[in-house]
Length: 321
Image (cartoon, rainbow, N blue to C red; front, top):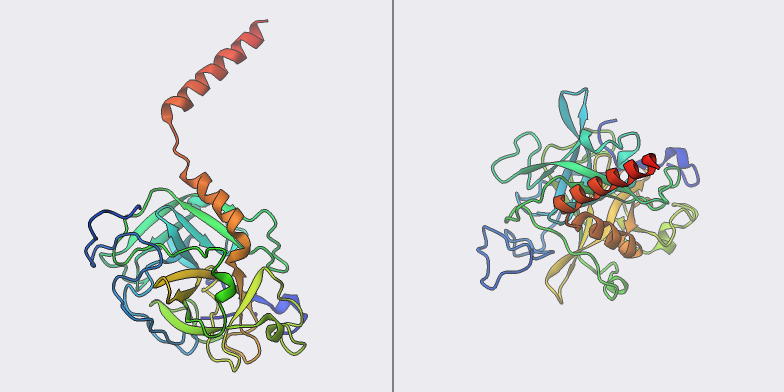
């Protein structure tokens, strides 16, 4: 998994694209999943390994991982970016993933999948109803690189499909290089290689912005809306095809995983001094909340019909007089 060299040369920064319920009173069975955020029903431990350099994740290891696929040549869907499920109808991803591809009807989301070539019985496919990109997204600098995909219909939670938790305000200051954080995706496993059909995973460390922004690294490019994660010595990173995927951190106090970042861009793949750059989720709580409220609004067909009829009557009256 990974991406873009050059302190100060924005043209060489590469995005990571590929291909250019409420809890029930009775506990749910382990093989069904209960929709509680940030839980991995099939795994009891926080195992992780490299993506660049390559290690397959266990099937169902990251149940919020989503493959966002775009229709190519009107005949075949191709994996473009990763995404992360935050509720039964909403997937967060990177804003740059939809550059030149804003039509929601040309996209689909594949959830609960391990191997993109063999979706299997646990996978779910959904068309996209709406795409919302942050209004202040800047393609040149990857500022505000976040978007939301609204699924056409809700997914049913299972052990293979679960939402991740969004970070509460009090959690973010506790995230540091000692926190267990992981990335996952179907991107490249080496810088100039091919994307992976099988979901990969890696454990990464959170790297202070002061180190990430040093003159021999990103040289001040990383701002407060971004964070760095990977390995200071290189070798562990995301890559092309991983954009939009989750940076998930485990909180031992709650025993849950939280979405701390979304894969955005980087220099190369797994290079020393150039860890991956992620959207800092804690900076976008307000925007995410408003988008989720918009997605969750219940549409009343009767009220729509009445509104249309009343509008037609009013228009007729105006023309009459």
